[in-house]
Length: 509
Image 1: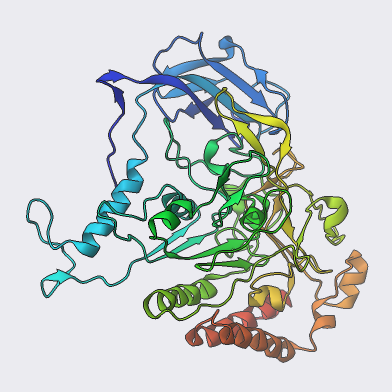
Image 2: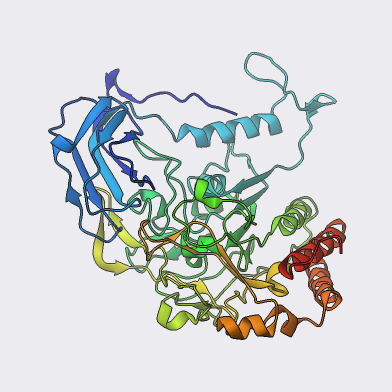
């Protein structure tokens, strides 16, 4: 569905204000064309500032007006300065006009769902297309959002839109997936909903500020008391909520702030909320190591992470349905926490990542400070940073907390939620894919390469031993209501193919 939202005006006059755009081109093309998020109010370069820096924490260097120009009111052309690689960060501050009333997206979702759920006909007497026997045919409404749409749902709840104009509940159940502790860059002038904070990119936009958790807490940095559910708790219209997270969304999306207060102290999970962490899975799920990811992720140094969670997600959607419609308790939260030590620092000195040949663990995460958005560009308040943590790992580098999908519970390699940036692309940082480092096939290969991790043959007697262990892991997931029975056999057969490929055997053998 597509909404054409109005442009805000000042009693009919255009609204003009400074806007900030960020560009990370991931190439060395020069000149390079950048598309602006809003039209520039003027072609005069005087009020505009274009800067470049290599990494988020570096000092901004101003690019002279002679080295960039307007091609139109929505595009600029930049002559790339020497000394910066393909992943340098360019910021452009300029007088923009015609902000879209982007927050109406929340109201549109609220009103469409409310109409379909409660109304027989609209104001023009057009009937509700979901009417059954003269009344709306909806008993319960569930919302599912992954990544950007998951962040939208968190912000939808935070802004109070789960209450319709008549005081009714909009969504009974919400599943926000891989959204981290973020909300969305929507309810702002000159909003840019597609912005997505990561370790290297989009660090200066306001969609990742307090509150982070569903529980109402007091922020140790700002002193403000708030929570994602604060408004719906007041109106008594909170839904039942599941949020699922990947390892990537801890490294980039600061997922630990869902259960800690920003100083590393644990905070509660509300009764109507379940949190599930898919250990060692990358954002969006399994990647195919055979695909040439350089075509759309040129900065990534290593092959992507193939561990998948889709079958477990399917079971959780079913569990959410049962929770909402029959009040059947879903699986308890499975999430890294401070109580059992499964939340740890991601620094290279303390994380304990194994010394895998030809692999360098970057030891960085997406840091967060309180930001002042009254200045352009936004500036962090010095010395007031949040504590952001990662999930603990075992000796192989695989994560130990949360839901361990078969690829992690019975591994053929090390799976991570981070992927290092390679030389020429802000090396030393991380990009928003996971990575996969297969085990050696046998002890001889392992010893020759200097790999500290046991080989496949040292872990499993043979293919059938491996399959027995996978079958046990799959059955445990099924017993925990984290897997549907119809997905058991397909996962086991999929694992058989993975083993044969890992050992260099024909899949039909």
